Length: 244
Ligand code: BEZ
Image (cartoon, rainbow, N blue to C red; front, side, top):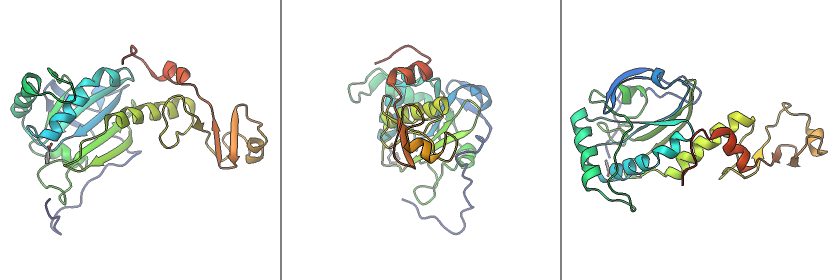
């Protein structure tokens, strides 16, 4: 771990609710103009510390193996590290030819992996945390919606591989919240009750406590939920074929 010093410039950190900072990049799948090339799609823009490292390798195998499942929710993957294009290509080839992990093998990474040797994009997105490492990106996850707005940000340190069920859960929960104007409680998964927002948008507190809103159950004025079936959620947010 590196020490952050007083000389380090203040980090630029995009926030939830900001427009995704635009950039042009060279990737393993050609040049991209971000987020313009992804208009109308959800994107998981993520960074990893370095090519040819074990935790990153396991993560890329997981991302690649779940790519079709993310696509089924109109979600594209874009990776980034402070490595050059030829390093990326050699690493991804090694993964395909040699590495096995959790029963996965012969894994081909077909989503774009950005080269960012100048750190320009990593700095723009607050992916460099000098207290952790000043020359490697941390494991950042930016979830960007079809309008190019940042909707979720998650950071993990260098030593901790991400949880991919959680990333897919985040995508489903954000899309469900948008489609049904609800919120999703802790640990929510499709099929579980959703939270009906408070503050006047859906009737008064008394209406709610009296059960005036059909299907809404209130445990107290601020805690109202309703059923939302997994079938209804999936029929609304899923755009691709049923996977696993
Ligand atoms: C890894 O991916 O294994 C890793 C990368 C940088 C620092 C520590 C671990």
